[in-house]
Length: 288
View (tube, helix red, strand yellow):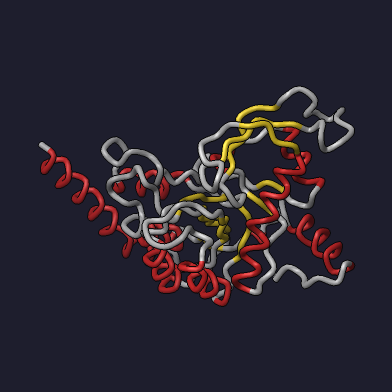
């Protein structure tokens, strides 16, 4: 029964691939729509494959990085993966924070709202999934959270020599109004993703096979959408990348889409420029 299911998934994936050349021929006009592909870190087991596909397709993306546990090496921001990040920076991809220890917001604690008058009052229940406090739920101040965002950005800059974007993505996209407000006060604006931009690579592959995810993405992604996937998901048995990634890029190009980094997103350009100007005034290199 399992073999039959695998055969059906393969047949469906091949059928999608088969229509792409004809689809591409109908898209004679230059691209007139934009999408913003982003990747969060993960176990990094597919990182090399993703980099290869992006290079082959000449697509630039935005990476949100945390120092997560990896299949090989000392964490996704460790020395083992440092050369990988340097190569991506040199290729022109954009880099941003995913919090150093991949810290999940769980809830606001009393005194965390807009009326909080000090960093000590702005308290949140947080749970890192990496680092020395992995798996522990504790109360954090806004200052501690900002330090986590900043630490991942600083590590990326240390590795690559490239300034990161003044943006971040909270693990799981889990936030609150108070948390986002405090993050902006320390210089970082949050980036989520479009509903169609959830590419499904963290869903169980037995219920959400690659062919189904590819077909859904090609049907539903719209102009301006921010897309989100990962550099490896531990729980998914049939990896999403590169099986879905390459036909997805080809198919979206055929539909007239251009791929851009978040440097060019209209919702964030003004923020990036304002933060860059403030950083420059302090004598630090600007966002690339």
